[in-house]
Length: 464
Image 1 (cartoon, rainbow, N blue to C red):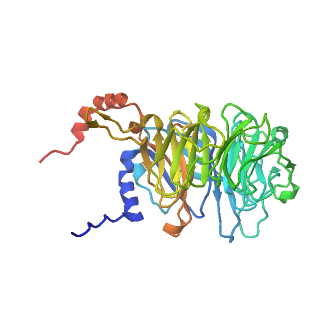
Image 2 (cartoon, one colour):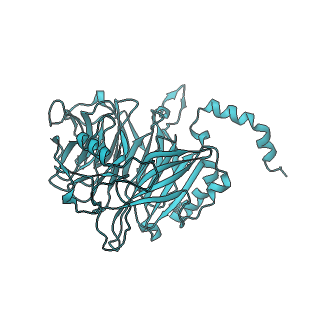
Image 3 (cartoon, rainbow, N blue to C red):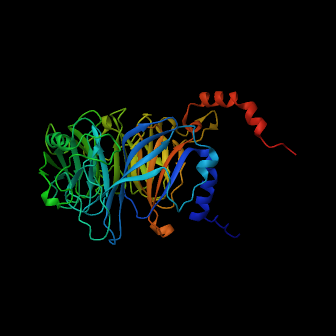
């Protein structure tokens, strides 16, 4: 008997074409923006203006060039279309190779090296931190920084602060505290480093001009703006925390304590720290995953819940109250849905049980752990297992390297992918919001659909 041939996996082009045909049904709004250069990080900044149909908001974006022009940190102004405003035919009519009219570059900072990660200060999100291929963390006041032209030979912009303390490159692990102006970093030296920028933020606020958001004019600026890094003020760490055996890949503060934080690394460990009791791990979970850990996030609505993502393709949910040092991690649940390494996880800011995960398989999955159900058998009837996955964004052609929920505009996400391998291009920036019929309570959705039942039926094609 011959073996049955396995169905062929659809090509990237076929999958993308299928996804694009479903855009009018799955999305309330989507903006697709082609990037000349790949980007490794994207973050929302402050909201600038509210209007009837659109809001204007800052976006921070990195550009990784080939050396023909400098690497840059881009500050853009984004027109975010409000819910239920965009017509279905409008959001589906975009050219993948063009730039979106909703994305307008506001300012360019010439970055000393590639921008691997961007994080904003929650208490003042005009202040951002960046990681590059060096041991230092760079702090930027984006309103005070002059706009630069990224041409070959241009002098690098001057960071407003340089945080020193790592002994080797610190490329990705970076977090800023929600409660106090504290910065947390991890690197190849296997350490987690903590700084306070409280006093320096105060001085920055004095030297930064008072201007309306979005204005390009200034009456006073920080000195030079194009001096070398060694001219920038330097800050030494408040604490250096040792406990990892390999590179620290991600860090995150507790949502309720500026002195508590967690980290994950290539040693498969999840470590919880408490700066009040020393620089050694408070809890060290030796085997949180079966491979390197790439990312971690702490639930701001429930401080006991921590997410981790790994090269083993899974996302795991941990309860901090059930973690013990030296033991193999026992997650509350293992989320299986990606086919390749998970690169980024983040809790939804407006619903406690929802989170997103982005991976090298080119998908950005949205999950709800409250929808997870176990496989059981009752009176001979088997119920199917629910994974908790309720939406899969398939608009990127290659690995989704970063994404960020918008705290100002509920359910709106920005995501970036490195599409060089599949499109011979740079990268793709997408800003999108799923159709609210997908995530709203079922009863609410059915009630609304019933209200419009007659209209829906009248629009349906007649049967032969």
